[in-house]
Length: 333
Ligand code: HEC
Ligand code: HEC
Image 1 (tube, rainbow, N blue to C red):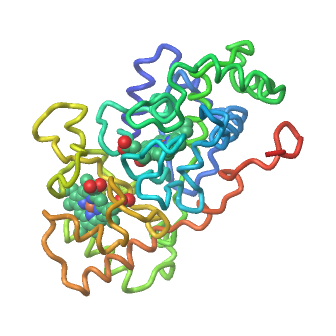
Image 2: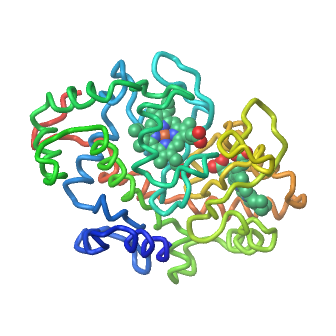
């Protein structure tokens, strides 16, 4: 990931000095910040704006849905509905994903290898048609009109994007949301504390499960501290009209291939899998047809380990929650 950050900086003329080295990520010891694109440096003002936008239903055509409607903090920013509908009851297609550590992922969403930045991804729910989520296709001017009609937003956009001289557009809106999402970092679970030297942070069964997770091959795909390799794998045959990454790439090998999901905060992100078809952790694990059958005891140990990836601070932190006031004035809706 460091290499990726270096590559992004090398390509962009502005260089990485622009990525605000003074931005305070507030990270635990030993955790590096995620890569930041040179054309969207981090700042406290931008993150604050992005947080407000993330919770603002004005980004949907009928004012009923915000990003947070499908990505709820207490669910690890996932949702309990297997396929949460969009505006006006438009049917959902896939399971809303948790957003812990999304800033570190090299590909985004379940099945689109071409979607590689949070800036790009934020357009999908706002203007996407397949499925319709927030329903703003062709309404970019309306977004600028709505947000620009609010004096506090005008102030916040000007502080976050001084180079835009007050112009509000979909492009800066998605940049701010992306900056906020880069701060959604979950690295303080009991397992992380255990790795940082707190030997008693997790139980002995969970420690056995952590080893079993390696020996059973889970960590080949659920790799590294983010528990995803960012790659697309087929773990079971197609069971619906969802053809996975094949829909984007047209490559036969990608039929039914989905991106390895992160496993952080799993305890609160049910249901599981791209279609939300697994209600329990056990069912999600059993759905991997290529993985050798696990004995009951091994499964219990692995599940105990996976439960140690729940980060209570992440699920409750004020800095990620719905803002209580805007520009010093208490929130009215
Ligand atoms: C109607 C529900 C809904 C709304 C509203 C919604 N999302 Fe999502 N989100 C989803 C679903 C479903 C997926 C998985 C989509 C897929 O794989 O095709 C997803 C995936 C994502 C991902 C990818 C996470 C990963 O691990 O790769 C990010 C990031 C994200 N959403 C951010 C946002 C932002 C930002 C907004 C607001 C601008 C938003 N979402 C609004 C349902 C929603
Ligand atoms: C070959 C790569 C690969 C291996 C090996 C693998 N997984 Fe997965 N895992 C995936 C993919 C891809 C998905 C998503 C599949 C889908 O949505 O249909 C997934 C989904 C999951 C989920 C559901 C997560 C969620 O948020 O929906 C859990 C839990 C899980 N895996 C645990 C495990 C465990 C435990 C092992 C070892 C026994 C394992 N995986 C081995 C690739 C893998």
